[in-house]
Length: 280
Image 1 (cartoon, rainbow, N blue to C red):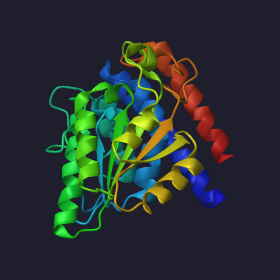
Image 2 (cartoon, rainbow, N blue to C red):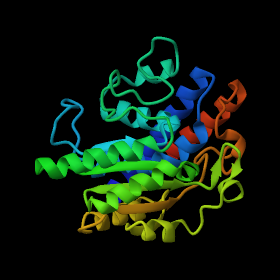
Image 3 (tube, rainbow, N blue to C red):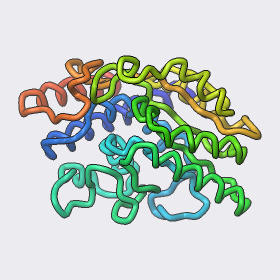
Image 4 (cartoon, one colour):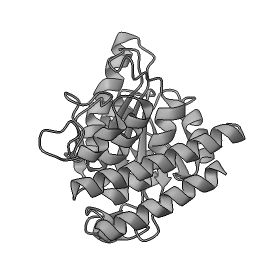
């Protein structure tokens, strides 16, 4: 990508992060930490990588994205709003009774959501089904599934991985948002996933490891994934939980709680300053 494209992606990611904070604050609940860590990858997917069109959200030829770690829906909603699937104002109604944007993605009621998710492990399974359907149909769309690192403690993740490899789903790209923290603490203290790259290799995946908050590395990994034939690809993306908000970064306590009024003001001030610096 050229410098202007990189700059625009950084600005968009900053806006995504601001909307994450806006949504969770107005909801008085939610999951800001993992939403913020995933913001760069989701931004790149929707604003550079995927073949999607908000004017035709059900286009059968579109690429698919499944947020398997569905509790981080604020990041997905923010990207969809900025992309034009629905009004940015909807973000303020996050998690409210009767609102379109609920705590986990709902494919029936939210334009642009390809799969309802939230029960950990199930999203990647659905993504495998989508990828296999494309093979049966002779379609060339790609399927992207984002997992949380803590989510990879679920056995269903590895059942789906066996399925993906067995069926040579080279149109499937799994992305693990590896921010190192989950609700109960450090991931490696809870279950010890490492060496996660060797585990996925053992299940038949092409493995790519990157800094998931670096757009150039995100781009190179996704470009490489498209060249892999005969097996699925997993991108293990090391990220910073709470990325972009100083007091949330690498703090497990921000896995699943909303900022109060003062914390909200601090977060929005920091993100607005980051955006202004990019626009200068």
